[in-house]
Amino acid sequence: MKRRLKKKYRWILVYSPIIIFVIIVAILFITKEKPPVEEMEIARGRLSSAKVANAQKYSKNLYNSASAAYDSAMHYWKIENERFYLFRDYDKVKSFALKSEKYAASSIGQADNNSKNLKKEIEGTINRLQKKIDLFQANLDNIPQIDDTRKQYNKGKIYFGEAKFAFQKSDYIKAQQKIELSAKLIDKSYNFANSVLVNYFGNFPKWQRWVNNTIEQSRLNESYCIVVDKIARECLLYYKGAVKERFEIDLGKNWMGNKNHQGDYTTPEGIYKIIDKKANGQSRYYKAMLLNYPNDEDRARFAMNKKNGSIPSRKRIGDLIEIHGNGGKGADWTMGCIALSDTDIDRVYARCPVGTTVTIVGSLRPYSEIMKLP
Amino acid sequence: MKNKLLLSLSAFAIAMLVFSGCAKVPQVEIDNANVAIQAAQAAGADIYVPEAYAALQDSFNVANQSIEAKKSKLFKSYKKEKAQLVNVVTLGNDVKLKTEARIAELKTEIQNTLAEVGTIVADSKALIAKAPRGKEGTTALMAIKADIATIETSASEVQAAVGTESFIATLDKAKAVRDQANSIKTELQTVIDKYTAKRK
Image (cartoon, rainbow over all chains, first blue to last red; front, side):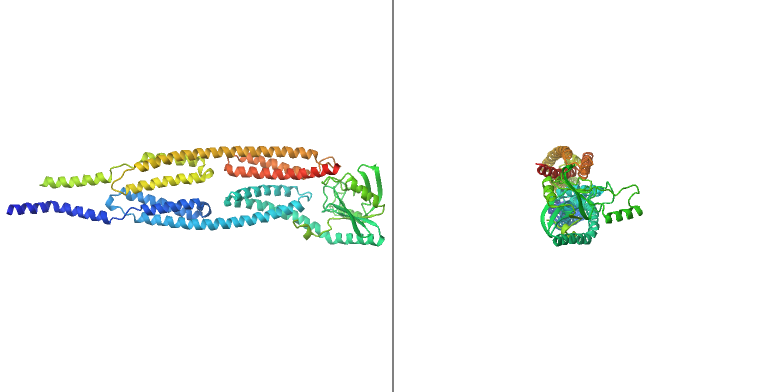
C-alpha cells in the first residue's frame, strides 16, 4: 500500500510539471493575440486603392506617409516573426497597419479634391489663354515689326497645345507645368502686342474728327469722298455723306502708324486729295489715283522728326502714294499705297474725280469694339 | 525515472521546434520576384503602363503578406506563396514586355508626327513661294515665314528631346508642334485661296 502510494506520488511529481507546462502553453496559445493578417490586408487594399486614385500624384505627402507606414508594418511583422512564437507581439505592426490605412484613406479623399481643384484651375487658365489666343489671332497677329513677340506667342501656343494634350489625359500635374509655361509666353506677347495697339488707338479721337469732317464735306458738297480704314482693311466710298460701297484693300507691310519717310512701307494717315488719275496703261498697277502725300502736316512732322533725330538726316519724305489696282491679295504687300482689286478700282476710279478727298485713318471703330471676339 | 523525465521534456521541445519551423521561407522566389519588379520599373513600367505596374506591385505585396501570415503560424507550408511569387515573376516579365512595346509604339508615333511636321513645313514653304509678292520683290508674308522657322526649331527640339524625357511628354510636344504647323499652313492656304479666287 505504502509502495503504491509512493509510486503514485512519484508519478505526480514527474508528470505534474509537464502537465502544468502544457496547460500554461495551451493557455498562452489560446490567449495569444492573433497575427495582424486582417489589419495588413486592409492596409494593403487601401494603399492599392490610393494608387488607383492617383494619390501618389495629387496627395503626395499623405500617400508617402501611408506607404511608409505600410513598409514599417511589414518590417516589424518580419521582426516579430523571427522571435519565438510565444514571445511575438504584433501591437506595433497593427499600429502601423492602422496608420497606413488611415493615411491611405485620407490620401484618396485629398487626391480627389486636389485633382478636382487642379482640373478647375487649369480649365480656367486654358479658357483664359484660349480667349487671348483668339484675340491675338483676330486683332494682333498682323501688327508689324513684332517678330520676337510672335516668336514668343508661337512658342506659348506650342506649350498650350502640350497642356491641352496632358489635360485630355487627366494628367493635371503635367498640364499645370505646361500651362504655366504657356501663360508666361502668351500673356507677355499678348500684353506687348496689345499695348502697341492701345498706343495706336491714342489717335482715335483725331481719326474720328478727320472722318466726321470728310463725311460732312461730302454731304455739304454733294460729292464723293473716300475713307480708308486700315485695321478693317476697307476702303469706303461715300456720296453725299452716305456710304455707297465698301472695298477690301491691301496696304504696306508696315501698315500700322503714320508714314515717316520714304521706304518705310507704311501707308500714311491724314486727309489727302486725289491730285492725278492714271488710266489703264499709264500705271504699273492697272489704274491709279495719286494722292497729295506729303501734305503740309506730313512735311511739318517729317521736319520735326528729322530735327529731333528720330529720322536719320539722309532719309527722304517720299511720295507717289496712290490708290491703285492689282490688289485683293489678302496680304500687305505695297510700299505704302492702297491696293484694290482691278474690278474694285474700276468702280472707284469711275466715280472719284481729281480733287476727291481721301481720308486715311487707323480705324473707324474704337479699340473696345476691335478687341471683341466675333 | 530521471531518464523518462528527460526523454519527455526532450520530445516536447523537439515537437515544438519541428512544429514551429518545418518549412523554409521561399527566399529564392522572393528574390526572383524582386528582380522581375525592378526590371519592369527600370524599363519604365511605372510611367508607360502604370496600371499594370501597380497591379504587379500589389501582387507582390499580397504574396509577401501571405508569407508573413504563414510565418506567424506554427504549422506552415509556403506552397501557395511560391506559386504566387512565380506568378509575380511571370507578371513582371509581361509588364516589362508591355512597357517595351508601349515605348516602341510611342517612338514610332513621335517619328511619324515629326515626319508629318516635316511635310507640313515643306508644304508651307511651297505655299510661301506661291504667296503674293510685293513691289520690293520679296514675299509679303515674312511673319509667316518666321513662324515656319519657329516650327522647324521646335521640331528639332522635339527630335533632340527623344530619350531625354518621357516619350509621352515628347509625343505631346510633337503633336503640339504639328498642330501649330497645321494652323500656320491653314493661315497661309487661306491667303493663297483668297488671292487665287480674286485673280479668277
